Image (tube, rainbow, N blue to C red):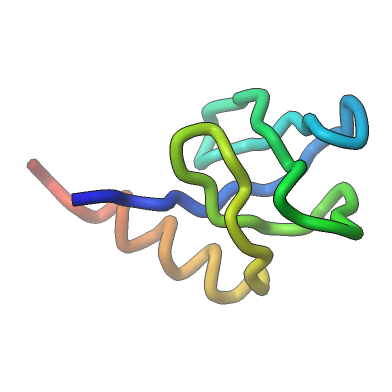
Amino acid sequence: MCLAVPAKIISCLSEEKAMVDMGGIQKEISIKLLDNLKIGDYVLVHAGFALTKINEKEALETLKILGDLSI
């Protein structure tokens, strides 16, 4: 099973790399699959790649659900 996690872009490092915040964890990811991303945008990240841009409401709801899971 694969899982893509919402992340907020906090800085653009180059045309192909960005630093994101994933619920308090900061990570460098590839953004080369998407165009026109900017600081503050939310993306779904899987295996270090931003796959698609999502809206803030959807991202925050998903992060809350993931945070509520107790495994």
